[in-house]
Length: 278
Image (cartoon, rainbow, N blue to C red):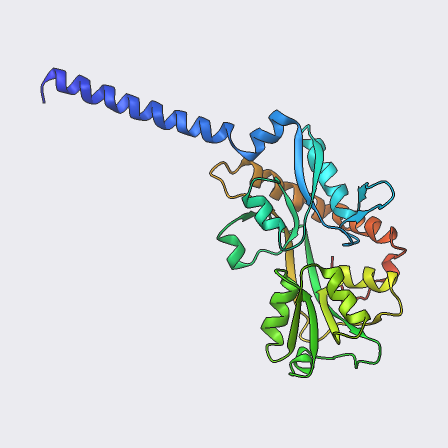
């Protein structure tokens, strides 16, 4: 290689390195964390009727609940304010992918979801329960529900549906767009029961005590609940949220936020079955 060719090679290598550095810079500037800091806004999904996670005051349209408390704490640490987008359990993943939100709460980290989004470490670990209609025998095991004559109402795209199809494949599974519709199906007798995370079930029965009874079938099924975020090369946002989740869970702060959310619907720690984890 002559001197001219060597200089050309060095120049090209320098250009490539500079380009790579520029690309990394562009990626960082376009990352979720940088966008939040620059705009001063943390966009989250909110879901109506999902106490203690989310509660919407229909008079003022103001949101409250455990996840709102968490979001406000996260936003404060990022020097931002919270902006909400009303969604559903099934649609909030799509909202993340479409860059409509920066954070989805109470997302269970399934293998399928891990292919399209990323997760923080768990904020909670939840148990799955069953709300039975009045007069329907409380199941002691999941096998008791795994019969063609049993009608199970679930919200489409949720882990409630995943559990129903995994443990009760022989049952008549009725899918609804929103969990409130699935609960209504139980209330009107269209379905025999509803599968829900325990924190949602106990709040639902507190608000509707004549709806039915709460069952915790065996084996006890639990699943971590995480925060969902967009998958991106810049890991700082994910690392921050994971550190935040671990810190508040370990100190018991997350439990306090959950109990405060329960208080809004008249529930205290004594009202929550021992099998229910959070």
